[in-house]
Length: 347
Image 1 (cartoon, one colour):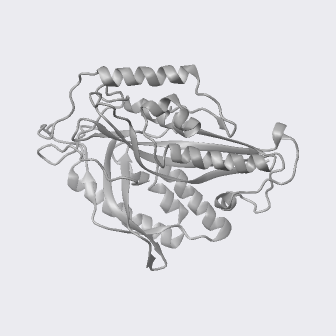
Image 2 (cartoon, helix red, strand yellow; image 1 turned 90 degrees about the horizontal axis):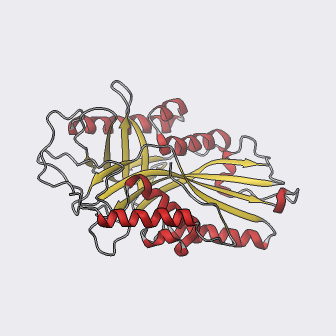
Image 3 (tube, one colour; image 1 turned 120 degrees about the vertical axis):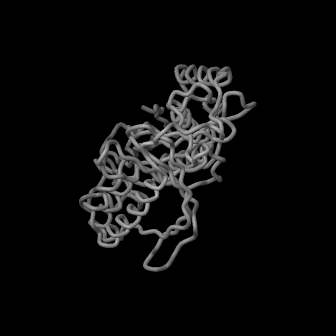
């Protein structure tokens, strides 16, 4: 579970426990002597997932997802989604039912496949592909996108579990002689931060901003200090209206995946929630709290009103680059993220 800290617009200091975790992780990463995967590594005999099978699964997903979106078939659409992607897609189908907003369709360019040489289940692979939104035949700008697919057992359907729009180019990914990528374990000690704890450090910066102790090992950018700045601005605007605003980046119980990069680091993919609350001080009854436009379609009834509080949550999928522990003055860099409103409640 990725941990986060609740943050109000007035500001709080990161707790000593969080500081201790970040410090310990930095020390572990920098002192590790474990070696990284090599581009010349040998593939174990008989990978359970071939590159051609991943390509077939990808093509099948594109056809099925577009068919479901074009027909507004929620059952078919959600059956081939999982993790953060399921939550985000569910919100789109809810918006279709409540407001008639069509489910987003896409045009895809030439894909690049990154398939780890796996020996069993779960199976997973990553695709990097330029993608354009298709609004009734009008294509939007091309955006470099990461798609994460997995299935948990033999015979199960492949699902798209996460989508990440890149803010920065992908790093070079290690491949073996057979063209397979090199998977990295969640507790790999050779990295600056253990992958299963890197998200917690990102969450601390989202919650606390550049003053967070975690900023010593997590780089600033749109998905860290940028999110903090945006949330703080909302808090100041709400405070001017006599309202209290809080936000909290927290972990999501979605699978996390890593691939070895050419410099000995790792590309990490993981999900996270951003929970927000706008309330009258003390939860007293007050004037109606405006519902953010992005969330209105998520209400079952369009006339729901928050006289006490309004909760609005986002689901994110992130891609981050974790440097090798031997790197000098390096930081974990969040190179992309995709988030959308997925839950709202008025009280």
